[in-house]
Image 1 (cartoon, rainbow, N blue to C red):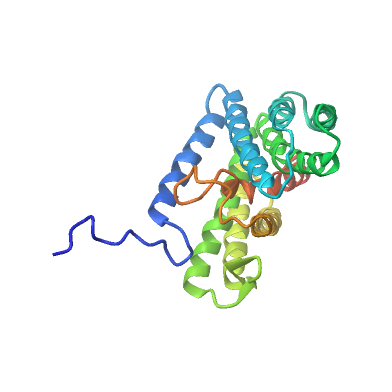
Image 2: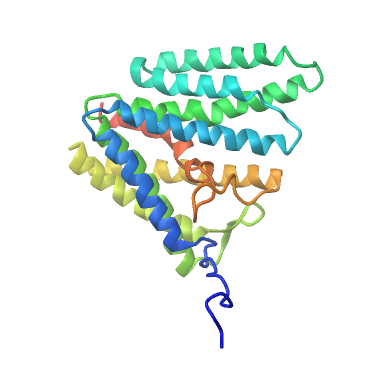
Length: 280
């Protein structure tokens, strides 16, 4: 007689995820983000973003070290927290300034170590600073205006629609791989599902949240699906180069923090720019 201990573990779904765990973790993360941005103390959203990018920075640095690079961690963590905080408090110009100062801090910090590998380590650190905290700073910029909570909602929810629409369409209809050498499970049918769901979500958000033309929201949604897909494929390419499946194992059903931020980070500046252009 087969006992519970003899039973095989639950296999991941067709798309390679433990779906119940992924849904539960996704709901918890969404609740934390939206709860903070809609709270009377909106600065708590910046704290949530800063915590996420600090964890993501650690994951990226740890992964890059497997390739032989040794990017300085402390100036990345300090500069990353400053970038997110100053973006919310002072705006885009000071976000750029904080990024430049972080790069200078990385160079100065690395001067204390032997010269061998300096270019490799500094390049890896600057890549990390640009990829994680600098792009995350645009999420803080989205939260800063009076209607910031609605902007953050339109940003995050549309990216989630890209993920969910692509997942559903890919599982049930996916037959033609989009980039088999980078992400074998990502299909063109899934991309179409992402595009349709993002365009519909963008049209609805722009009409009901911002009271502007629905077609502007549709265009916003299509831009979001493009940047989110490129972000997903870009991180998959990095992971294949490093030789890992996930950036970490902190989030059951998802992997690491960076496995959830991969689509959000490159989309944040796109959403910020388009919302300024269409909403004001």
